[in-house]
Amino acid sequence: MGSQLAQAYRDGFAQIPNQAVLLALCAGLFLALSIGLRGLAGSLKNARAAGEQSRINLIFWALDLVTVGPLLAVMAVSGGLLLHRLWPHSPLPGLWAWMGPVATVSLTIFLGDFVAYWRHRAQHSAWLWPAHAVHHSGT
Ligand SMILES: [Zn+2]
Image 1 (cartoon, helix red, strand yellow):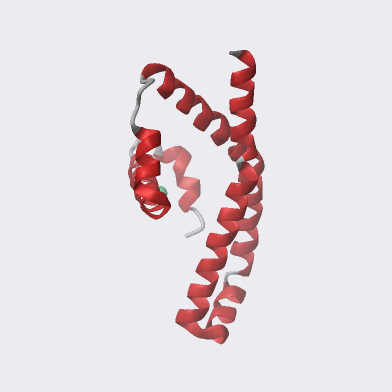
Image 2: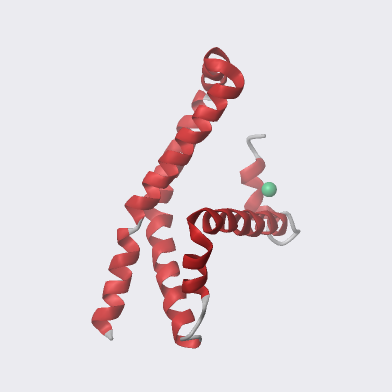
């Protein structure tokens, strides 16, 4: 059991470079979308205007990758193992395969956005606002 658990965590951590590639592909897609919508000159003007913010965002992204990434891998593997223990015949793995990658990614983005929206709304409550205010201090 111990070696299976260790292997599950190793598999989870092995996904981190894939996540980085996926994020880089998404960034490239948004860059192409920006160039398509604003043209190259307009996009370069926007990029220069947002240069410092973009640099800071890239630094935070890199920090997230080495701090939050491993934490998310541990949480994802732990959640999967817990779900498997509590609900050994769960139809979810088969559901993902049945839905196919496009529907699975679309549902994942929708659910992720849904959770992020309500998490952010909660951070504007009186209890969480003192810690969250710094997030809005630049705007
Ligand atoms: Zn906020």
